[in-house]
Length: 77
Image 1 (cartoon, rainbow, N blue to C red):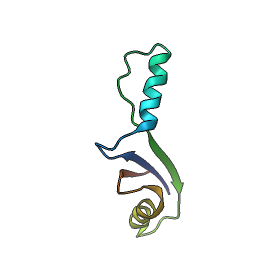
Image 2 (cartoon, helix red, strand yellow):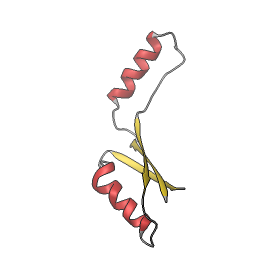
Image 3 (tube, rainbow, N blue to C red):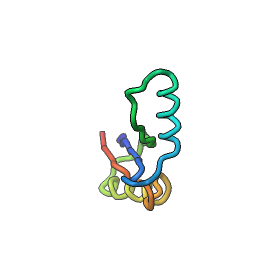
Image 4 (cartoon, rainbow, N blue to C red):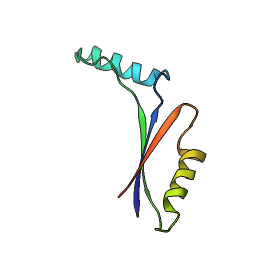
């Protein structure tokens, strides 16, 4: 099975990388860009099983996302 995991910063968490991207885009003439939030995307292939969703959640909480400042969303394809 294939799962897609999206990890993004929680609302209110400062995103210095996103601010740098906004500055770069503005510098290149894309003045309409007012905000960017940077995230991570993982595509994971794993064996199917009755506890696959629970295992994916454990992967996210133990390694893929810092749950103090990030949230995650899992899609199973």
